[in-house]
Image (tube, rainbow, N blue to C red; front, side, top):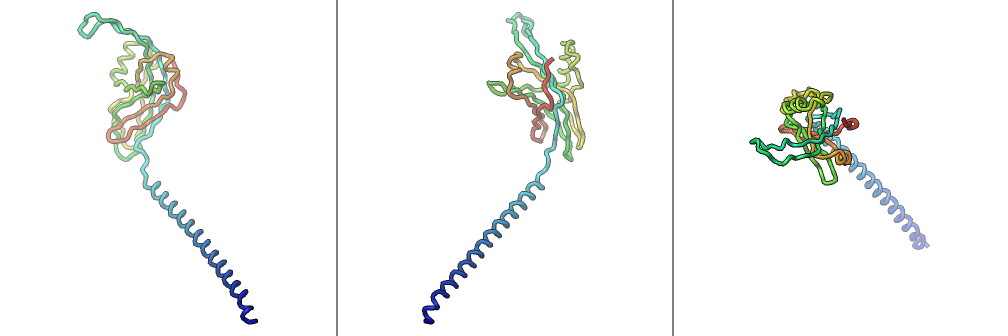
Length: 206
């Protein structure tokens, strides 16, 4: 009888040990998951705290497009007759604010306007301050769009802002301009990544 009674007791002990083993294993799994989460959070905090903010920020506060139909003079550089070239042009007048949030000077190099059409991206460089002023002398009817031109080779001291206007031009007609899929601006600095901006408000036409 004593031998017959030992069987159930032995099975009960094995079952209890199995349950304890299962509980122990589940605790280990949970502890491992928690440890992994803690490590991931620590790594994320380290990476984020180690990242430096960009050297520059900015905003485009005003964009005005002006449509023009132009025709060449019919003379080449030496004054000899040549076929006239007639075309439509869009002048894009942009007001931009740039902020140097680094501890070192920023050297402004160039500004560009990018217009995305069905056939791809069309890019135009900003006219120099001298050419900007010449444009208003050549076309007095644009006087209402005249502003203070932003220097294309400006140095922005640490912590300072600079702002002003620039103009770019595209050979396209009104229909093409109004069917554009995108419009943005690139500000190029020496020794720093380009700053990409979009207009903060609607693009006006005049």
